[in-house]
Length: 435
Image 1 (cartoon, rainbow, N blue to C red):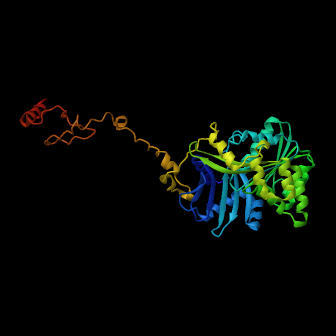
Image 2 (image 1 turned 45 degrees about the horizontal axis):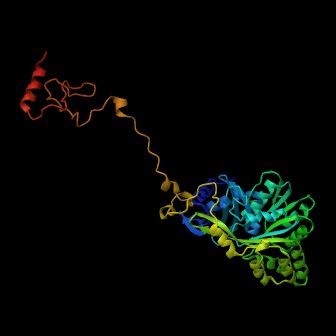
Image 3 (image 1 turned 90 degrees about the vertical axis):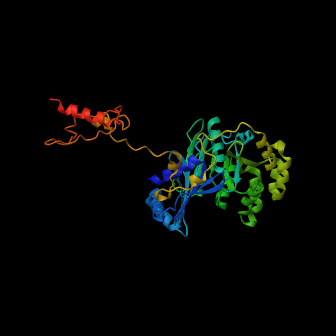
């Protein structure tokens, strides 16, 4: 069950164009908007986050969280897919929520270079997608899956922890498995997938040497494998894989990596103020013969030169890719409208639970219900200007004062000449003398 306050937090994040939402006991809600941290609202009570964590995780995952002090899950909140990391801090329970985009993740929709489609033409081999945390690796990975899904008839097996995007079967047959929900580990999921007749194997992240070894084996045995790894350059991604193994077997790992390497994509995010969106800024290393020879020899420092000279093979340096970004005009925007700035007033938010009252800033409060009209309840009401209050007539012996049930016989109209007092008194006297 998803707490209602999470629905509000995620909805506000979508409206503001946030990529991440951070929560921690005793601190305000924090959004990451265009790479900058923005605080919103009052401090979130620790007890509220604790109850939210129990509700999101459920009894089984909560027991694992108590033991490990962290948990990874994915949920659909307010129609948006969210990747959620729950963790323990010095203040209490914390959340790091990645708000995933909802548009169709093709290569064009992700504003990637169209030449990247060439990598999915291979029938086997290894394609690595690298970059630092929060650089859009998962979105690019989803773009490749969707491209294959739309254009080829393949059996695609996706192993992630957690699942971030759901794919509908189009031309291809896509099967998604989440660790540890559908398999106890990445290693077991990879071993199982080799018996499931895959054409394309997608690995959410290579974290351990065992996962890397199984990934290389799968790429060598006739499968197209797409995987992600953390790094800041293409050369660092390949070096990190090799250095994860003991020194005595690194030479054989380099040879295995060189034999199956199709390419490496390392990306960052670049904000374009003239367009108002973030786009991937990539370095691309194509697996040419020269590149494979460099990897086999372990001279990873020479890969930067190979990228510079490998334009004809499909390699792109960061500088060259930046020039392409400057020349590109047909940018694709996310399907949902997102504001580009957050005002100071919107950041000073106050509602129970720590969520800011953004609606109080953006929308006027509802008008109160109008009271019943006096004209409806008691008939037309005379204007005080057109119908001045009538003075009570002089009470005579035996007369009662006028009331709502017994009004007086005379009423001063708005056009009476009040300056002629004698005429007015005579008029009153004449009416009183009438039978």
